Length: 97
Image (cartoon, rainbow, N blue to C red):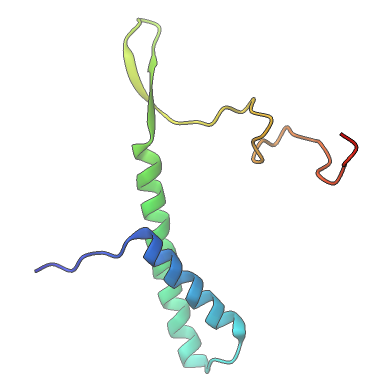
């Protein structure tokens, strides 16, 4: 029977626990290094899972010949509610509106 790899959410939760233990600052050096190594492995596993999910998210678009092609998903940059839009220069503390 093969080992089942942990779900993304479980790995992320464990990574958060590792970080919290390390931030507390009361671990002996050897134990801190072990937690660090575990955290690096968990972070890499989570990043891999996110990359895999990102690759699966595609949208179909028509090319110039009218054929449907799968293209990577990209959020609409013209969305004014998108907090990741670097062109948004509004002041988030301004409550005059």
